[in-house]
Length: 347
Image (cartoon, rainbow, N blue to C red; front, side, top):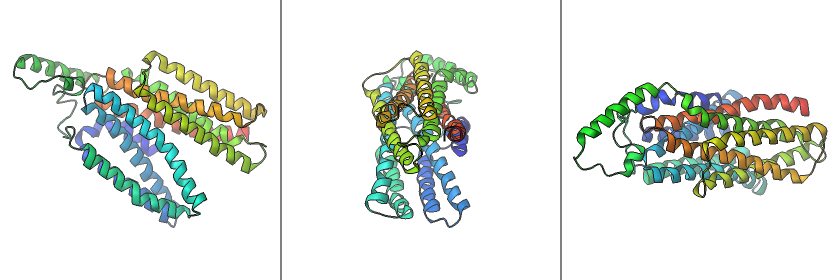
């Protein structure tokens, strides 16, 4: 997760200097490299380099895609953020299905499974961006939020500014926006209502995944039983993530409700720790709270970014959407560290 955190956090300093087309092309290259290095690398360091490429690609793609929605009018932006959230939600399910089909149904090797992904995913990513998305928005690096902030970003796109009336007013608004951007560029405290719940929710749910669910099985002393529950619980979780991330098209929560989702997620983490430690309440019914874990995680993600996209000042909206995505990666990284300790205590 370290490469992902670095890319997302540093986005505030260089995203405005690199066009979306170049970033998305870099994603395709990194994606292909990750498949090649992991599938065909003969040594462990080579395969680990492939993992680094995958982390870089994932972070660059997520941060860029979230930021890209700021180039569209408010009405479209909310739908696009929901669509992105839903797509990333179903990607988790698709990943499990892809692996299951190639490894368990077709009996293919791990390398063959990754080679098949190499033939499909980078090309699909490139096609979707360059032939379906690119051209529907302004993709110019001159759009530096700290220098050009009054030129029709975000909600301003909802209005027709083609007429020449009110040019003086437009210039005043641009000057105000430029001054605001300069003041706010290094101030990230306004992001805490969105980023902190994201961090906490991701920390709790990935602590469940990496530290607790792997210790549960029926019977608990069977390694094969623990693997079955771990796989099933993650599928249930991914289904919950997909459904809840798609909910943005139906309803939207308030910022004040996001901390409650984090509190509920920690409640589920505590519940699973107790179940694993005391070996009580064992049964396949535990897939239900695993599903709810995905629901809370997905709701937090889609609502945090939808709310942030609407609440941010146009001068810093693009930066805010990319930078806030650091929170979920940081939560996952911290959860992985705690997960190792939880496994040792609960196993």
